[in-house]
Length: 301
Length: 238
Image 1 (tube, chains in turn brown, yellow):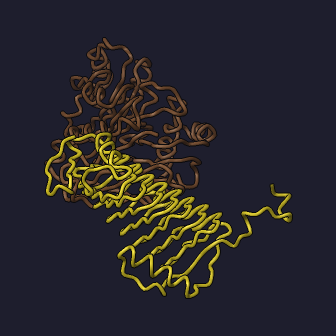
Image 2 (spheres, each protein chain N blue to C red):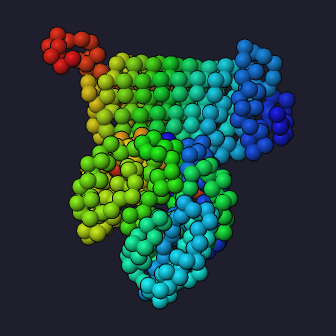
């Protein structure tokens, strides 16, 4: 199983309450994924020339100020860390790859959950309701967000094995299903220079997308490539800096429903999550076709 | 049991924003065998909840006002369940008798393994509609997705729109009537002659469903009967 949700704001009101809506959607998917929960939120773009990292520490008493000081020494600028439970967001005066590289080299005990200009990823083991409270999802304002509730099937229940997965700047993936050719594909992608942090199948799919995008494919092309190169069951929701996309495998065993109003576009594994959104009763709702990419993008200001 | 309003003694309104699915289903189950109680129910705020109005065994009418989740009206006997919205996976699964009507669209495996009764979908049905049907009749006003009527045994699937890929794969003796295009036929499924008796059968099902369509526009598909009996010529493949 697993539950996935996505919300794309089309109005300022929904942007203002994005996190509260996302949290409500996520809690509805508890029965599909009680093992762990996670979200990717796209919000508060870093200033030009700066980038944003979301870091996770297994140490509950992590001294995030020391990380900030280290980044300041290396790059000049780093804002005060924004701490939520076991995660912290740091906005750094460096490009994302440089900042991420510094953390990997200097603080290998920390895990880079996301890197980019707008993305923030938070994920943790436990029930979605506890996750939403611990990470104060109701505070988040933003343009779009994805969420996942996990029922683990092929790798351990850990923070690192939770979704969303990010293996590219501002890119993330959530997945309902299981892939059967991920071990071979992971080795192939490693030879292409894509780095993996877990043995999880979904991380391989995220890595595959990152590799295709790096090689010049559009998001549409990269997702269509999944139809031939990935073997297994999947409903994917993919987040980028500008929007999100949904793809189901051609057999389409894994559920998905899409709905749209004048104020939002939402996807979920089940209608229950969408029913909690304002105006859901009159939303246009439909089941995405197998093997068809659905994408929404926000025009950047 | 939170009864919001009783419009008449024969109609009970149940609001699922204040009543649990379990309470609702127990209330409906208690009417089995002709037990006294209302013969009509109106269910409000289903909000995609699973297993609504499952396992009914009474001649009652249940109107559900909104979208429902998985396995709505599963295993139904005698009752009429009408969904004024869309239905998720497995609507009317293993229907025994009675009638289930969905005014919107339905997700995969609609009417799966159904043994009798009538399922009417006014919108579209997605993949695996009528999978392993065993006597149910299904009438779809729109189109059906891939692998519909997979291993279908008996009963009729009437589709006013188009059918997706691999229609009737490994079919036994069910009859498939499709008005629109068929993306592809599954193993051992072939087009068959549409004789007068078949036009009459389709007309009867359309009328029972309240769907206005000309029965003579439909084409019939069924089993070539080459797959489901042991054939000595295929011995090497087993």
